Image 1: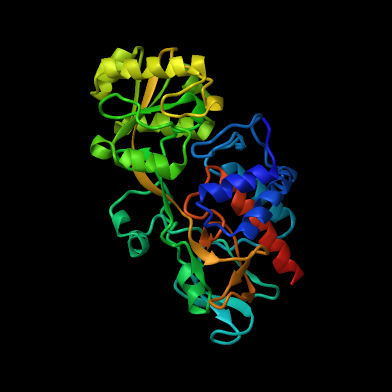
Image 2: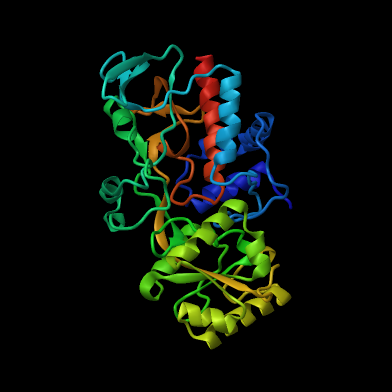
Length: 390
């Protein structure tokens, strides 16, 4: 695999229609390998190999040996314990406290305890916002894109963007709030059911049994194609080897989807088509045409040749019933290349930093697959280092 910091930056900016902050993107991509090594030094164990995640545009993704973020949390929690860093649970931050109403340093936070008591925590160095995005907040989504109010989300219920408004209250600027990314989730609930990654071993077909999009394209391109399909429901198709190629978290999610009718398995494509209630001849033709594209390294829908390496031919065959769900909010508080939160006049707010999905400016209109996990650790590490220095 040929890769570089420069290619990573170029793809990130281009995929976001050049609406990301170039200086911030270049700092993020430059320091991403450093963050990867830092995670390893903290005890995180990665699976061997590098692959292209859905929407990733390049084989650059690394997966923890434990699914759903558990590996990251365990490794870093253990590191916090080793360093005597306290982690306070059931403490809801309700206000950021600044020396003046719209001036001076951020000097602490107001929190509510589980029992509803108000407490204040002084910040001697700085405050780092790392509270996530607002994919699970229908009202906030609809404020910026009314079409998204009724859609399900792939996110956990805590992704409600609670600290964006308090940051605005003390003068923070926000950027890109209407750049909201959708992901194919299970058609019943919208929740993640695996199936879409790794890209090289999956194809998408619609209710007519036809392929309709190159599966390695940008996420927004695929989202528009799925939303334009009959009934807005499509199917991801894999064979036995493709099923085995999914990581542990994706496999676990997919297997649980059998119970709600969003996952299917059959010994033949004819049987699979019958279960999906789509034309068997069309499905077989779609698979045949795709397999021919793998042989010829030329896909009529424009899939990149490096993603034409895995035929769908070995039974049993698997399918996931998919629709679009709100997955990631690219917008948030504006930050500079030091992870400092910027005010409405383009100046950093002293003592206030942000990292991850609560911030905006990295991804532009469209987030490259894999860049979210890379961003939270890379820019999170930058924010912590700079807060400690200042």
